[in-house]
Length: 356
Image (tube, rainbow, N blue to C red):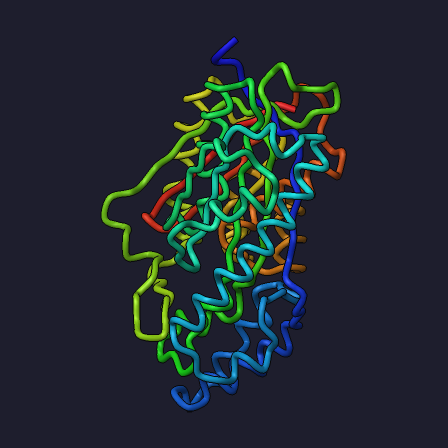
């Protein structure tokens, strides 16, 4: 029957092979920004304060010491985004026990490179998906896209439950780093962002086994007027230059309590009904703010902090790494409610509610 809620059949992730410690990244930033900041040593403690130990990138650390044009960067994006997406998608399909030809639609999100035709078109033959598979590429939602893309994919699965849906997210944030960037936003980005990919398989009620993942109940989206300057890209000759302006932790504290209340009401839940919070870590201070809003003790968003520490901020992909870790933990009991939340350019908030 149409209209019944889909469930998560599997989640899988992948990271590129070049692992860079935070101390190495700090040395890189010292070299990248010393020409434009005479007091660069005063700014470098940000690398120690974001609670990140290491990150993965699609290029070796030596690559960042050189100048690169946008065509070169984007060619690397297309090549590596496709490879990482394929790995994550294959793992997700295998874990779900879904054959590629069964998939009815592919939803694909990314914001760190461009490709026409979009990357998902090349995934069809690589994965063995049908030529009739519906493709829905979504670009420009940044860190919020993991939650937003999952909600849109769930809406499709709810309407067309007879075929599984594949949702893929990939970001290569490292390719957007700008050597010699004169902005503090650029310096902060080199302390936070990383590369990765993730995939989720969703299924309708008739495909659900007893050990299937959470049921997706609904979602809630908000874009606040006059906040478009908070986060985004400035397009320059060398590609995407990050733009960060206002304090995201302050925005979380000021706007998220009311926003969360409205979001909960939209699916008939109250704050006390929610036991599990799967939250995108824009950074450690953003997680501090979310823990205050959710009424949790400091450190309560343990999975979010673990993923941030081990992988950094992979933009849209990060929330799916956290979801994978949450599902593997076995912490939830049947019937428990949870919310998956992320913020991103717009400036927007995305919430997806689930029941275990």
